[in-house]
Length: 163
Image (cartoon, rainbow, N blue to C red; front, side):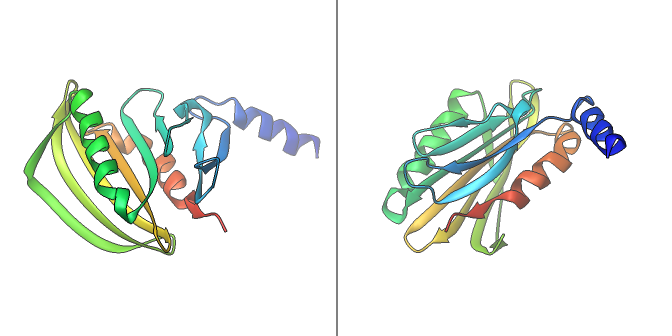
């Protein structure tokens, strides 16, 4: 038992290992939850959550809206990215559909640039419940994304519908 506790404490303080919290959002009427490492500084926004990798190489936001509000949320995402210096190469757009943790989902992916160079950009639309849409905004520095692959996979795998 002491060895297991010591190993857990040791692992908790290894570089790159941080505590994580499961956040339900939006907090007033939760629709979904996700587990985000503390070193990503997750924050609640008006319509969801957002987080940045500690090295600012990755930005992730998830907004909850209804079908009527989707266009407004997408426009806000685009304006946020523009304000952060992100330009999208619209000729690189790729669309895919499938399921994301049991939710029907559609993704639009692009390449682009920001102040640090080449980036990947994605907007994913997932339906957690009838009448509700999750708009997932992703922006990541190419060449740095791989370093965060395990964290990103764990976060996306943790995205769940709140019953």
